Amino acid sequence: CGIFGVFNNKSAAELTFLGLHALQHRGQESAGIAVSDGYDINVRLGQGLVTKAISDEDLKELKGDIAIGHVRYSTAGGSNPKNIQPFFAHFYGGSFAIAHNGNLVNANSLRTKLEKEGAIFRSTSDTEIFVHLIARSKNPPPSHINLHKNDTEFLPLVFEAMGKVKGAYSLLILREKQLIAVRDPFGFRPLSLGKNKSGSYFFASESCAFDIVDAEYLRDINPGEVVVIDDAGIRSYYPFEYPQNLKKCIFEFVYFARPDSIIFKDYVYEIRKNMGRNLAKEYPIDADCVVPVLDSGLVAAMGYSEESGIPLEIGIIRNHYVGRSFIQPTQEIRDLSVKLKLNPVRQAIEGKRIIVIDDSLVRGTTSKKIVNMLRRAGAKEIHMLISSPPVISPCYYGIDTPTKEELIANNMSIEEIKNFIGADGLNYLSLEGMLDAADKTKGYCTACFTGIYPVLDEEELVLSEKK
Ligand code: 5GP
Ligand code: SF4
Ligand code: MG
Image 1 (cartoon, rainbow, N blue to C red):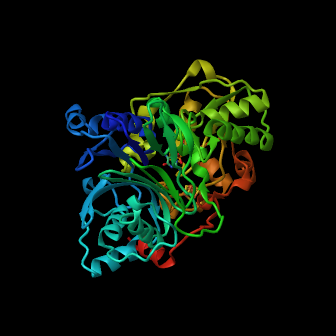
Image 2: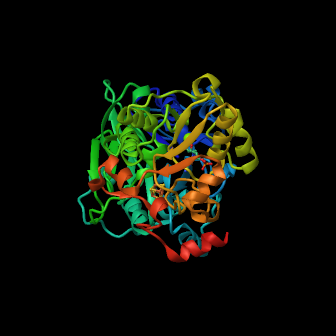
Image 3: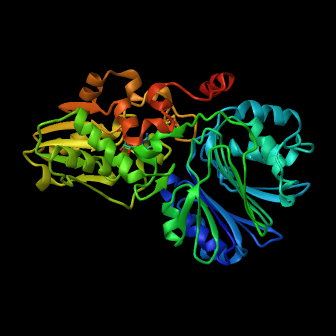
């Protein structure tokens, strides 16, 4: 998912719409915007792309200077319209809206506990846990940190909720007169702060959303940090003493984030290109050209081409009027959309030995179709190179990887996958090579490639596997 927030701007809703549009690649299933005029919070939600989900009418009605927005693709909770964010709630101290990127690993047990205490959930999303934890908390434990007078009432509720949830969460919370940003202590998902020339503040999952509203990237929200903005200024809190044990999602660099973004304080473009360079160092192959699987494989393919000296050819064209094939919920639609999306350029590949570069191989269905397509278009030899290691385990932190059974690298050896997709060769970037591209000292989660999870709730996993 993608989240975006604005503080102190007359066009808060419109700018949020633009910000969400720039974050569209992070979720295409639904979108929503919540705006405060200082007294009341108004929310508009819809299904599909931002331009479809939020109408001109909606934007006109969303009056106010503070806003948050969300683009969703379903991980926990499925594609139920009730799960569209931001969520809105009244509580004894007023009201708030919340937008979440990430996934909680102890959602089921917290939910059961809250339900036993009388909470009524209206969605199946783990994000609603935050709503209930915040709204139901009456006597939060006293905070050991000095709170600004504007923060004494609400922030302890947020801190208490943070103390109970486990997993990945980058959050934006809108209050009548405040905007709050939260990042989990492991820092799984990105979130950063920006500012424009007229003094409006912005929060966004990726910095490409600042560019579209003419704001400047200021800094990352730090893991475990809570940032509050209101008329009294901008304040930062670290409610807990966390171990300095960062687990930033490496898959953001591999695939998810846009190459024109800064996330986790680094340029996605540079790191993705390094992954391609490292792939060339690990697998020097004698070939006539390098063909990227657009769009996600492009930057790594450029890195490979630069490092190896083998020219890059656009041997496959992508039709941009179709969404990301993975994000469409059913297999039937996914099957169709590969063809709708990609078409070979015969002139570029006929009679050639080609290296095809994609960012990841998950189910293997896309790669199989691509190889088949290139073969029919006359490619002489097809070497498939993947700029990340085999995905062997699901993500529990907010990226929608399929179940373990559906992950091809979990069922087949690399040789078997090569035969399954019909390529003449198949190689993956090593774990070392991937981490080296991103500077391994910086602390990354690699669980989907290694099966080693930084935070898990065992009980919870048994439950979710049964579902
Ligand atoms: P496969 O060959 O496994 O069927 O598909 C791999 C392709 O799926 C890659 O091109 C990758 O960019 C794309 N992809 C699109 N969305 C996702 C996603 O949410 N997760 C993963 N892991 N890959 C995705
Ligand atoms: Fe990212 Fe993979 Fe970790 Fe999920 S399991 S947070 S996709 S690195
Ligand atoms: Mg792709």
